[in-house]
Image (tube, rainbow, N blue to C red; front, side, top):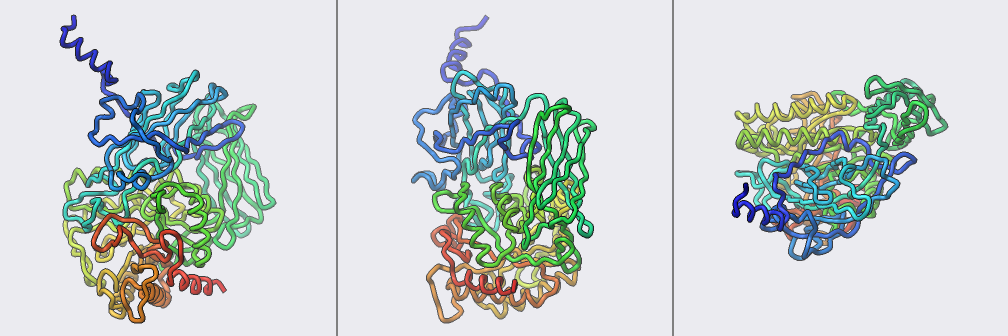
Amino acid sequence: MRTKLQLYFLGLILCIGIPAGAQTFPNAAPADIALFPVQNEQRNRMDLSGIWKFKLDETGVGEQEGWFNGLSDYRSIAVPGSWNDQFNDTHNYLGLAWYETETFVPAAWKEERIFIRVGSANYLAKIWINGTPLGQHEGGHIPFAFDITSLVKWDGQNRISIQIENELKPDRVPTGNVKGGPFNNFPATSYDFFPFAGLQRAVWLYTTPQTAAIQDITITTDFESTTGKVAVQVEKRGSARKGTVTISGHGVNVEQAITFTGDAATANIEIPNVELWSPENPALYEVSVKIGDRNTIDSYATQTGVRTIAVTEKAILLNGEPIYLKGFGKHEDFPIYGRGSAYPVMVKDFELMKWTGANSFRTSHYPYDEEFYKMADREGFLIIDEIPAVGLVFYDEAENVAKRKALCSQYLDELIARDKNHPSVIMWCVANEPFPENLGGGGFTGQAKETAESDVAIDFLEGLIRQAKEKDPTRLAAFVGVMGGPTAWLDLSDVILINRYFGWYTNVGNLPLGLRYFGGEMDKIHETFKKPVMVTEFGADAIAGMHATEDEIYSEEFQRKMIASYLDVADAKDYVVGMHVWNFADFRTGQALMRVGGMNLKGVFTQDRKPKLAAHLLRERWNKAKE
């Protein structure tokens, strides 16, 4: 029999909406994001982008007080979009906040399985549907999905509540508030870009058939002479035992029946007179999969390009021929949108990259919105696809290192599940600039000394590269080495990727000395490892409109000269396979003495996409190389 005191507390719990038992939040599964939501005869989707309710939870009481049962005293917010630049009081806010929207679910969906898919929630998200806990996901920049079929109400609005926080912690990826880290900025990131927070990509509701559904499609391509070879592996759930795979395009329409063994089946299809995918000829074929023993139960269509990627001691080979990567490191960053999806900006960026003559970019330093990859497939751009493993260190507490390693492994599984069918993606990048405890100085002989942390770092990075190669042996895998980092780490990659700023961060303004270091170091690296070298970052800050007749740092002239000089040095090395300028456009960072106005000004375009002198240099140089 309950005492009066017990009854009082039970009543209090019911009154304020706190669940009597602890709420459980299962983690999202990477396999559930393999197929982007589509609308066809068997599947439905609904984009929930728009104006949502939003409320800060600065004291962390929202979950205890049951905010998932409906927000009060809220304000309006745009989704997708970062919360930092939509309000005057949230620019540097990274704590707890709540999003809420309501929607009817169409009655026609009653016989389907219904899912929610969140494109990106930075950094840690929990979801409730109609007040019931659904699940959680750690890590931004990548989608996650959950089945919500059993939670849907058919007689009214369905409330979707998402709690998000973006706190900077040393055991997270990317890291923050790392003791002894290389950055001294606010907010206290361990990386040089702003930690935008919130629902930054679209949120979807979508359906799959109830009885059987296509779970995943994995496409690998090869060719022999003029015949393309495409392997299509299909994974399904449910009762279907048979299906078909059809490849069409460029005058070809080839269909092959498949029979499932368990839940998997593979079609091996040959394409006569194949059109190979390349930057010069981004030829795409449609791959259509249908499953069902008599009638079609489920179908899904996607696009692929037939191409191969390989590496030699001095070259990256696309379709058996050397390819030189010209392009940029980028950021998803634009005024007011923050890191939110902004498709007109994306289209403009591709237009400007084509204007410069670029053929590639790196998704620094996180996976981009999926539309970037679809656009790259269509426009013929090559992508180095990167997980958010920036700011990694290996010299702090072992439990921090272990947590980061697990997160990086999760990110890599999610990234490959999402992006494995894009012909534009030629390389998985498992980390950017992992930092040793004692960073070295300039030149090859100024590298960091080998310490006990090197064994930890090599095990960490080698494990990720091995994971990438095991999950996808058709692409290259690498990490990007920091200037002054230990050379032994570099040998783990298929291609030596390095960021170098001689003449900027070291030998400041002294380009002749910096260039001697730069050229000499690259020679030593190639001589030591016998692998091709690519410079994935180089450049200098330039304040738009600042001009000088002398070599004066921060002027547009100095930026132009530094970029041109680095390109000249690289052109003389037959083992250099690419040069990516840092950066495509100016972008927001944390506040620091070197970051005037909280901006990194290394863009060859301004943040609003106006060209600096360096952009015109690249246009002249890279387009001339095509002639």
